[in-house]
Image 1 (cartoon, rainbow, N blue to C red):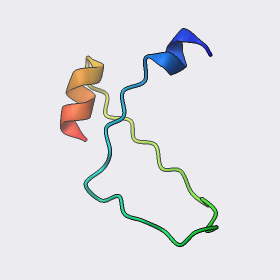
Image 2 (cartoon, rainbow, N blue to C red; image 1 turned 90 degrees about the horizontal axis):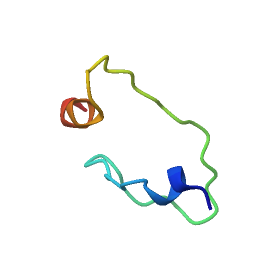
Image 3 (cartoon, one colour; image 1 turned 180 degrees about the vertical axis):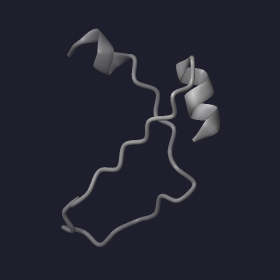
Length: 45
């Protein structure tokens, strides 16, 4: 496993909920905040 993957911090969304078993993920939404640091971006999101 690469160092990048080992260093991922899980920050679950307050909008996250359970889905029915077997339901495929059909969308991934990525946000760009333009903040100067990752910590600022996480705070903004």
